[in-house]
Image (cartoon, helix red, strand yellow):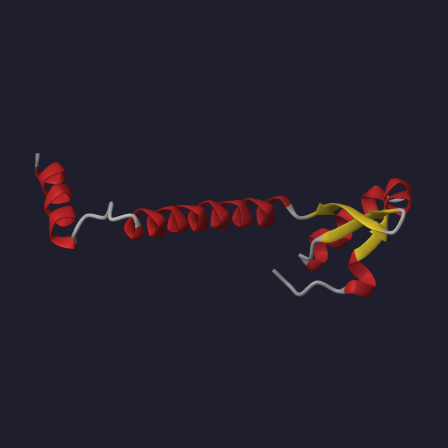
Amino acid sequence: MPSFRVDQDIRPLSEFRAGVASFVKQIRETGRPMVLTQRGRGVAVLAEAGEYERMRERLELLEEVYQAEEQLAAGKGVPHERARARILKKIIR
């Protein structure tokens, strides 16, 4: 994802309402997300649909990594050779 540009990518919600099509065009052309503000505070982020999906997938994977780390720390891990043997047993069936 291209770098966020404060001077171009933070806009008031009122501007967005007045020019939705131009905002969508800008997001598509630049690939950058846009922050919408209301009364000076960020209220929403607009992103290209494909980029949003990629971010969501990365976040899910990261959550799985964190869960795995917690399980290992709690002693719930399986040694590599035993895990490999289990997988090979299922594949060979």
